[in-house]
Length: 177
Image (cartoon, rainbow, N blue to C red; front, side, top):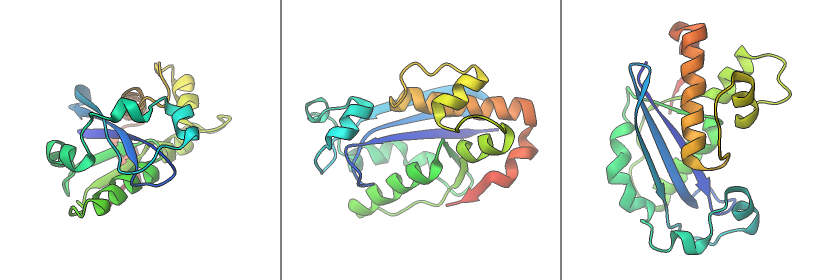
């Protein structure tokens, strides 16, 4: 299965405040490429978000704004492409709201949420947060809330599910966005 995993971190509670983005590209069930970028949001940072992910305003001061980054990544968001995230509702909404903020056209793509698949396939975990699922599956997650580490962990969760349950078991979880 080919897909791209995505993870955003935000500067505050607003969905259009992305301050970092990671993509992990999977082809033929192998991670073949990754992208990570800090993003300069056009809104203020909230102390609680900084506490969670460790990204501070001075760290993104010279980073691209999302509209400068979008031309480099929009190729991964097409009608037949699967975009995977752990809690995809959050990451899809960050993408949507950030594109709206910059008045960029919203792409249509396929989405798969490893939070939903993990809840279905691994009954009885204490919760289904990314770090808990990774611990249960013995997947390395070195820096939780680092977009690149989270994104790679998400890709590895889906690869584990493909290997254990098969692609047909995952098809019902693919939705159009």
